[in-house]
Length: 376
Image (cartoon, rainbow, N blue to C red; front, side):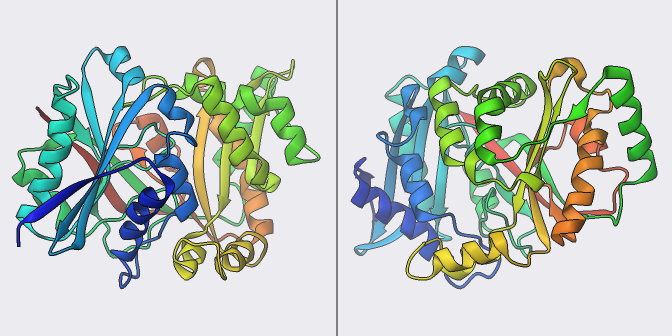
């Protein structure tokens, strides 16, 4: 049977079917970590995602003999395109069976949608912004993923190359052993930068206090720190409000480190969270009937893995040892929480500042991923 491509309307019922297909597609895979269905649905619904203020998107499903065999979303981020001057189409949320006809039908549909809107090149997998998942897995298919990463079958990259797509950017990931105490060199550097730049670790009595005092400033520092990174889409005020409300108020204070100067201005931040990988697998990405229990157990119970979500240092303080101050605070907290391992999550392979921070730790580089691109 030939492949039928259907547009997915931006309504909750159709978007939910689109998201659930991506989860069911990996039902027998022990390394895939499903997203929360509600999170991906809200990402793809214009009414729920403030990125639609400057983005346009269209999702497609592929069917053969009436059965779903693939999906894809095309995204146009006008903010990034204006910054780069290149009319670029992003693709993401891509899944497909190992079949040339299915892949070609999906990619042709999204490329045609982009051409009709004046796009001259295509790149992906990418999301609306850097807060979404990005990068196709190319190494580490037998490693359990994280809630912040894409998993895909090993045959995916070959189809991208068959379509004439080439590597645009690469990311690496590490599994880091949490030491019993901060390495001696880290402690010395932390002490030095504390005295030299009059910095300190801020303390908070509650997540609410953190959000009210530094919520907006925190995301503005992220904008400054990440501004020159590949494909970065600066967060708008509406997005910042959205992420403060959705995420900042559920983080564990012991897993966050905020560095400020002697006038209490934010200098840097490190944010981590207990790993939800096994909990999401157990609940199949759904809160009900028992998904909420597995997530709560991972959050409050015994958990030996912590996910490093982000580190952001103001540009004027980068390469001055501020990261050492973050680690000197977080490592004792990690030990107290019982974490044995940390997942770095994707880091651009050419970002030497980020790569160099792991040189003092026992680590294993266990996953690689990349974005593919070509002219339209």
